[in-house]
Image (cartoon, rainbow, N blue to C red; front, top):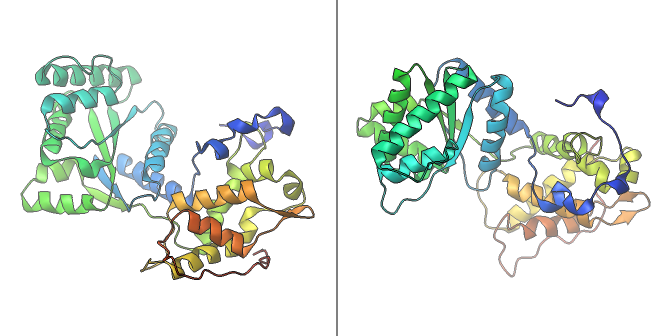
Length: 337
């Protein structure tokens, strides 16, 4: 892990701008929601909860969260083997195909060869050897888009779980997916499938978007303080795109009220109902537009309400009727210090 003392500030001109993660959109903000979720999953593992549901609406950032969990767990449990797979929509589900997908998830080179029984045996032998070499007695499988799995897939996972258990290996399976995962768990309970629930659906966590001003401020502060490129330097994203303003103390997080109001106004004029919740995809696209298209006034960027509303609306945060009149204010927002 890079410490504060090890960070440096090379010449900005030496950094290839076209490779910046904000422009390529290949970066992950470690948000308060992610940190809270990883803390809960760590407790699941410590308490022997071998399976749980992490569910939420689309576009909240669950896939990036799953990737973050895959990177973060070994920091809490050194040498813990962690693997990921994406649930597929199977037109004709088969044990052979499913165990091939599991082999691929566990990075086995022979994932496409053999019968169902051969693939299952190869998977168990491969995972057993892998866990033994890691010095651990447990292995974690993260399944994204888990709401796509059918009952038979869980039955096959039960067989896999039990075979590993016979070898003294604890399999943890965490299911990331949309809200129908809870409905699937309820249906399995009504069908008496307690062997599935007791292994893979013991507990449930909700993954949500930005719901409050304080959460948005923490997310904006990620650009100011934590997201860096290159990673081993002091070039935070805000500092890179606004070096002069940053040097004088300007920060994105100071303007959280302006960003929040832009989302509120678009939501008010759109078709969204219910409590305010901003999916991460819409939030990061808005911030990206601002950092790459801001207008300057002296040495500070102009935080224009009109421009922010346009950026938010362009993310399709809310379906706006064609004849809707969006706010047309163009006064600079006061910083929320």
